[in-house]
Every structure is written in structure tokens, then in C-alpha cells.
Length: 112
Length: 108
Image (cartoon, rainbow over all chains, first blue to last red; front, top):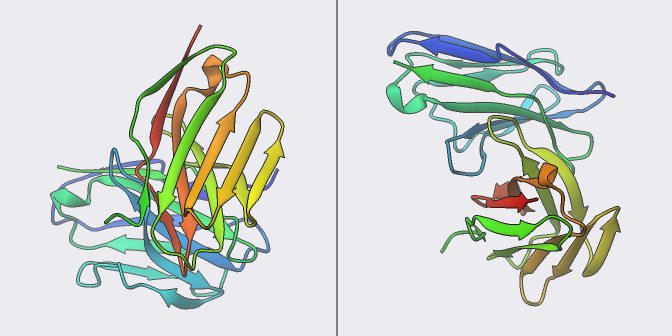
């Protein structure tokens, strides 16, 4: 069964350091999403790509977060510098038609 | 007003009972509705989606949608302890908006 792949699964970093997360969507899925989920809350969209283009990054803190999907397949989300409040689960999802979204296993980030 | 509202629970039901999970949303223009199951420490898993008013059944799960009342629900029949998880309601306007989830506990 096709799945969204993410790495790393866990990341511990000190504040002010840089971190990067990688996502490989389900093959053929043109739409890719990055979400952040804080404990006890639902996921919140950070950025949405359609192929290699950003469709929505209105909730991405652009002073420290960046995202790219250069070839329209896999994607990287970067945080620099990390802050204590960035501790959360970072989820990648993909969709064939911008309706049903399928999530990867996530990256649990802890900033110390 | 939150865009998607769910009771945080926990909702406790005995094994074999029907669990009823509810969700309301604020945007009348919403067209598609989703239920995700999330086990502790894991990522959300899509279990149901519904686009039209009425009921949609898939195995032990039934999703119900009432657009006039801006209400969507999930029924789980013959609840099992393995159904114990947080259930997230998500509503698609121009992007997917999630509720905070309802924690379901099924006890033997």
C-alpha cells in the first residue's frame, strides 16, 4: 500500500539551531501539505504545494520557516533558528485531487 | 467562534456499544468533510469522508452530514477497545480545517 514517507521520525535540537524535515508523498499525488500539530490540538496547515508551486503559505512563519518542493515530488521544510515554541509534531500529507489527504508518520520535534 | 468544534471528551463507551462523535462547523460554504483517527503519538489516519447530505456507511463506521444544521457526525458500531483513539473532524473550505478532536475510550 502506498504511503507518505517522512524523516526523521524524531528530532531533538537546541534553540537557535537549524532543523530540516523531509517528505516523499504518495506516488502521483500532485498536492503536498505540511502541517504542525501541537499536543491536544488538531493539525494546522503551514504550507500547501501544487506540484512545485506554493498554493497557500499564509500560516507559515516566514521569518524562520521555509519550504520547497523543487521537482514537484519530495519536499523539505526547514526551521532556522528553532525556538522553544516550535516543539510539535510536523506532519506531511499528500492528495491526488485536493480532497482526501493522507498523512505520513510525522516528525516529532523537541526544542530544548 | 472556532471554525470546527468538537467535544474534547473523553467519551467512554462499553465494548460492543455504539459510539457517537459529533462535530459542528461555521463555514456554510464547506463542501467536503472528513473523519480521521489518531492513536496517541501517531499521525492521523483517514477513516471516512462525506460530501453529500445524509449517511455514508463503511463497515462499522457511518458518517452523517447535515449541511443545513452545519453538523457532521461519526457513528462507530460494535465498538472495540482498539477503537480507543482521538477522532478528528476536518472540514474543507479552501483548506482543511481540523477540530481539536474527541478522545474515545472503549472499555471491555
